[in-house]
Image 1 (cartoon, rainbow, N blue to C red):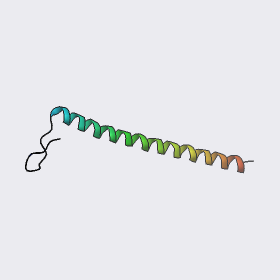
Image 2 (image 1 turned 30 degrees about the vertical axis):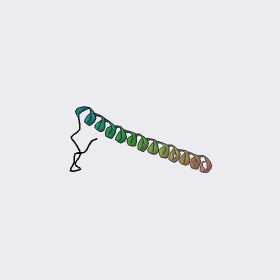
Image 3 (image 1 turned 90 degrees about the horizontal axis):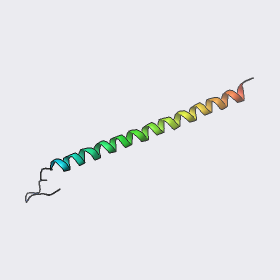
Image 4 (image 1 turned 90 degrees about the vertical axis):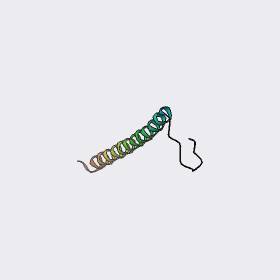
Length: 59
């Protein structure tokens, strides 16, 4: 991105604006995937611990 003599950024071209928005959306979507994965793995471990408890304490 270019700057003029006063140091203010030049306006983005439509292609550059599209790329910037796409990168922002991609970063947000990737963050959502990591959150989903973390919740999923936490849930699997929680269920596994409950099942181990039930097997060890059941009669």
